[in-house]
Length: 135
Ligand SMILES: [Zn+2]
Image 1 (tube, rainbow, N blue to C red):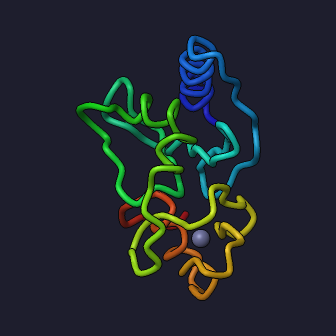
Image 2 (cartoon, protein in one colour):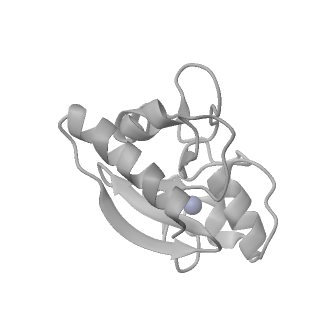
């Protein structure tokens, strides 16, 4: 975890604490830090452009980086936003399961497209919501 990501983790911890929630550490992979909010994976990304950016709820299909809600707000509300999501199987991004494993970037739900995607880069893109470059 970089010092910048550590500051991001503290920012999220503070916002969660104000909402009466806690952040659980999970793991790291490909420069992304994996954490859990209400049992839902929140990634701290490698880079961000927005002071409230730098977070991805891996299971969510679409993800706002700027505007309202900010990615910080969405990270705080990860559990609620995941519950509200339509579990459509055909989508290109997001997961059917709430928690994405940092070892293989899969959510473990056999009905999720990630279970049959052999390519790690593709599973990362599914989790992050846009094209990524591998280290
Ligand atoms: Zn999945």
